[in-house]
Length: 106
Image 1 (cartoon, rainbow, N blue to C red):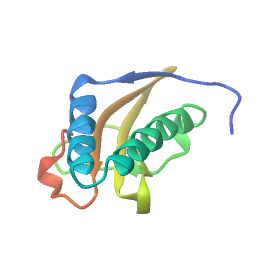
Image 2 (image 1 turned 180 degrees about the vertical axis):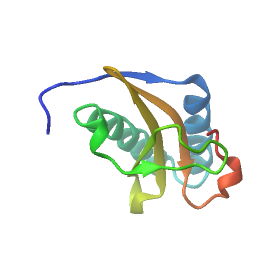
Image 3 (image 1 turned 180 degrees about the horizontal axis):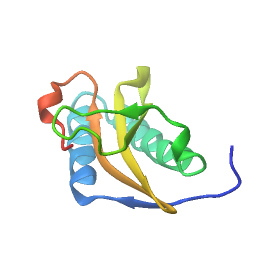
Image 4 (image 1 turned 90 degrees about the horizontal axis):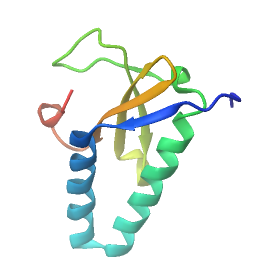
């Protein structure tokens, strides 16, 4: 991992989307919802050290925007969509990989 740690900006829409995922999971299993929050925190921390080393993501709605993705959660069910600008990592969306791409924020 790199020595430099980037700053993070979590877009409000991405946080709201993540909250929806947690609420849905908590209906089935409160323990799984807690674990999802832990996994999200760990995923954000992980990408801050080498954000440019992650796979590029080309969304249907906005091509060529320089998005990257990181899979996290049980079975890599969730996708953290982010971009890098100078010394900042901007999280734009948190997607459930099992849902339609049409529900994407990006």
